[in-house]
Image 1 (cartoon, protein in one colour):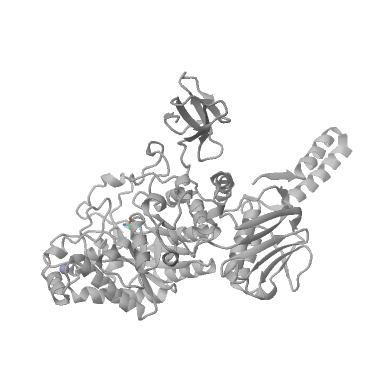
Image 2: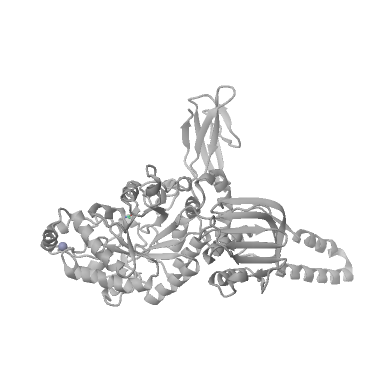
Length: 639
Ligand code: ACM
Ligand code: ZN
């Protein structure tokens, strides 16, 4: 978004002119300075010349003229009412930015209007909204409060990028008509707080980010080998023991030293029930459901150190809350022990009342069956149930828990391994090992959330590892790659496609040990994911997104978020040129990157426009940003 400032320049020049005028001049200077100070204290003025909205709305038509937002602008909450949660949120944000419109009882000129439609607009649905801006008003309308909330998020993105840190007295918004609604209902973001604990304020900041980008499902990975993160009254050792580990944050994750005898456990923490309630309420204010994840039956070192009797007979491993890589993850809850089932049901009894969302995530991933294969109790359970293999044993355990939570009105979600043991028709499958789990599940009639590692794992590098802080090395998930993701797998018929609820990005935190690093990995890739999930597939346009995301990087930084650098690795496309040679275009992710290239003579020139070469020519590139070399040299052979 470009901002054309006006007002300041002229006033400042007036001051400069009077500085040589004797006593009268000094009085005049003083008066002028006071005027300037008054003006400055009232804020800057700006004309917005371009909207940069992410996710891209379904339809936006620009019109002539515009609306001037100023201190005299009013706000009409109409049929919604001033005490409506969405309106309270909107008023609070506007106040924070010193845009403090007086609430009025009926629509009038110079007014922001937030209206719930009298008759349901089918096209907008439950989450959609429209915005109409003309010289008299900004009108946001929707069928629901949720829709109004999303409309407000779009309205905020029409304001200057630095609205949260700079005081504005006048903002001129170009007239437009906008209609918007989401492509998918599940627009998720996952956060692993087990590998590294994140405090309440950091979680809230994550939720703010989700709200900005109209994401609506927060998958909270609360338990794993590296820590148990939620208060459980009936099993206090989960918190006194299972929530703490030795601190190895000064060592590379892959090289963490084992605990020393008697060493204090200083790394960790957990959320009290009061904190959970506070975060759930904070999320609800932002129309975000929280889905808690309790890992069953694997990824349970924190449980087994706290309550070793929940492990298998014959497993003489001394489990400890993990502090570095743990592979293969052999810790597993005994499926043959009735106390384990009672334990899990007790945990559900404490979890369910805290989370109003309709889902509990029960994990189910990477449960290594090594101990089950050696445990007489597990063997006995299999025999009595007539089960053929250990996958079915896991399936039985999960279905037992599913039946239990269903009695309390909840459905389960599990990672795609839950397909291996016979999944119930009401379970929702999270497809992470590629897309095949999602396809199988949708064909069976199960609901699906897509989160394949290659596109959705934001703990993976976003760029060439040689130029990045340490991260998961599996593959590189660039912003461009995320943007290119289509959550709808190919090969499903219309009825099966309906089971694809949406997708989510995942932030596993092995390598992420500070809030800043979490943001660095999440941003701006979350912007791409939000557009993938919200905007129509037909509106996808990388060049447009790349331009808008540059504006969002400024907006996010001005909101105190750390934004990742992105990838500086260029890529090329070519087409036949009129002279029979090949016309080469160089592409890159980040606006502002300077790419230099040569075609074999070693003489680098800055790329400014497509150029022609013969087929087979080798083109070598270098990428600079802010004057710093950000990538190694790449060679491309043009075909
Ligand atoms: C997973 O990444 N283990 C779900
Ligand atoms: Zn067992």
